[in-house]
Length: 200
Image 1 (cartoon, rainbow, N blue to C red):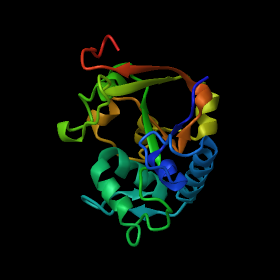
Image 2 (image 1 turned 135 degrees about the vertical axis):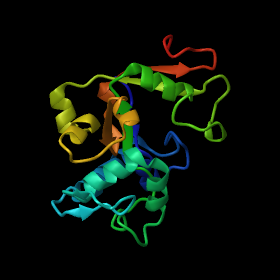
Image 3 (image 1 turned 120 degrees about the vertical axis):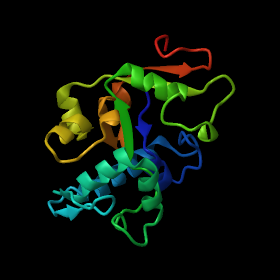
């Protein structure tokens, strides 16, 4: 059984200054992840929200759906909006970091992210010696995914709850809020510069 994976928002609320949260206790991280989930759950209340970016035509059933579409399609803009908690749509959240953890049902996309060939500009890449990224392998039953309230991006798009770019839909994204349980982590692989997508 592995350790839980925590969102940046959970690490922020726990007071961590490390990207992996290793400078605070797992109990503090679990408590912070619970708070993140509670705050995000409040955004699921059925109050229609008009899209505030782009063509401003989409009406969402909840702030959660707008937030999820904003996160998936406009990651950098979403990050900037979270940083500005004094105003804007996210002002009732208690955190300024990303509450979500993206995963992929398609191993090739996860491997590309781990190797830094996708989703990370060269200037933003952080490496530790020979390790350029890490690939986590999770195993969930459909019942466990439902219990975690994981967001199946393709399903939400198909139901017209969100509108996601086709490039992203191909990734088979499933998004978790706050944390991912350690008991579902079955393997992890450190990605090295010499690794290939297929070999990882």
